[in-house]
Image (tube, rainbow, N blue to C red; front, side, top):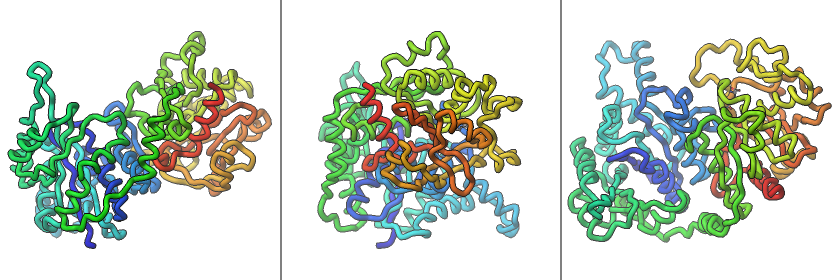
Length: 534
Ligand code: GLN
């Protein structure tokens, strides 16, 4: 089958869940045995989201091949279990950069470079790129932002052209809109959807499928009305009602025939509806897991999306351990020696979160000290691991001024230091140690056991600083063990205090690779330890 392209656009408002709908559709097509990929095209001008403040754009997700991307790629991977790559994340900045670089090289032979055709051609090339590198049946392309945004225009024009060039059997548009409920009138309103579809039609794109986000059940009449006004079949008006979990969306979409309608419209035989057995088992487990376990997240971003993958990884592991994880955000900037006990009170386990810069780090160090001395299961991730290492140096090794050179370049005891390869780097974007690297596990350690006695694992990184090997022997002698080592560069990737219940810090980010059907072994082991502590 020639590759087919599905474009997901959004109208009316942002945050309607385009990423979840894209991931769900990917899941449903994958379950039918199709080879799929999901990619995100973001209209903003940053080259990648790596330099964006999490307050503006949520977590930065990292692919195995080392691309800093939008958090929606995390949803794609968690839903489908298929690894994304740098080709799955494109921004306006990257598009312009490659066109401008080509212009500077003289590739355009004196032509005037314009949005149409040069920018739109580059967008089209990138949309088609994934399928030119591997055999794919469906490429789902989510367009970030909302139609009507000035910066979305070239992307929509590129889609319009591709639909024309590929034809209706190979290119299709799914448009996601919002149906607000006006409490005073007691009515659901379709006008914003009509306007949004008109706007899309004005750009030359007729959506074949509409997904309507709503807080209330949409009746048949309302669906018929939308279909009538928007030139869409009634069966292709799907509702996406608020659900208790994002993981119920695929099942809900399947029930309404989202994938079947798309297959039909693209001329593919529909076949049997997949049962989604393991997925439904997960949902069932989730429903059964009512016993609560309280986990504290010590970090500086008081915002759900900033630690998205960690929250999802905890939820996956909780479900498979028959528990409902209740996370509590504990702002590290507010933790003091006087209130640390109170701040962490009631938590059966603590995650010390990743991050950059000095803000809130002393609170993370205090939390690490408290959990170490009170034997509370603790999981330090990236900066969190570095804070565990610093705390240990200050309070056990006796180096009161121990620090990371990220926080204090003058420190006499730089137990965390800039990596050699980073010392010559001056540019900010995409220059960290990024992507998956091998890590050799020490036998008989907790992590070795957690990974099912695997000697070599591969995990994703995003950092510039590392454990300083000069201090390794001192740590080992004093009970903090280096139990995961990068074999090529001899970098310490995991520390563990074996005499404690569960006190582990990883330089890498395990949260990027936990999926619904394959919860991450370290999160599984951590939750297990938290349960024994509860
Ligand atoms: N700021 C630290 C470093 O660059 C940790 C980064 C992180 O937590 N992702 O090494």
